[in-house]
Image (cartoon, rainbow, N blue to C red; front, side):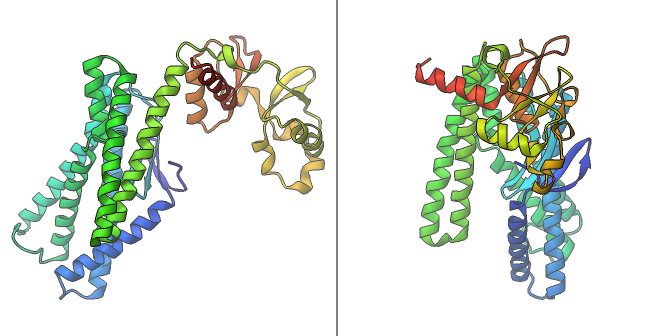
Length: 377
């Protein structure tokens, strides 16, 4: 889930928003305003709208805390966490590596719902201390805020424990199956199938509710089901890819015949004579007979067209020593993971002395997987 609006950093983790969050934030504020107006009609419009905005902000803060709990467990287990992003369906922590054992997976999955349940219980406890009783409507804005946050976080905890992978409950289910079978791939496939079944259930129930008069609520449930279905399928596909790459090394599928161009060539000539004619996605830049770096279409696209004749490749290339790289003996799955983690399409392959042996790209891996599929391997 890409971050479009950065908010800051906590514990070295970037906190940000996806554009879809703006839509759900607006809907929640409107919903809260309607709820507070209905339950406390004596409150003025200023009080209602101010309370709605503050309550929504605290709700999204509680989601960040929920995701930070996942991130904290991941960091304690030495798993790198890059960012937390709020989007239309909640939040997601970008944990860059999978758990290495069932115990880690279990605690990473269950800590989020536990955190949300604790937040909910604390809010309801504070409301009770301040005089609220369950059979009564909260009489003050503060009580209304605490009661709504309390109930919504408890509901959030319960919802996340639904065993639909890759939700938190699905990850807990995967951890249990992993512990029983001792096979992470098998556990993931089983949890993903359960997740797909639950997602189909959400879609069917949502559609029936929509035509039964539930309106937007039914469509929202169906949309959540669709999102879970796609996420479960993607998780299962990831496991299948990892299984097909098992035992495959970078050197087995990397490209060794890398096109080489002179670093003194200008960008216009490079595009006209090499990039457009060959369709290549990466080129080795050579200076004084030695490899200096790598240039790709991504490095060219941000340069103004008028500057192409006056800009040479050495000025736009990525120096070899400043790039992410991988060793020839590294697993191909590690290369794919590194490219995904750093949003790259290719990696230079360097030996122990730092000499270029070739380049591995997403295209090389995809071609390898397609060939295996054609041969029914």
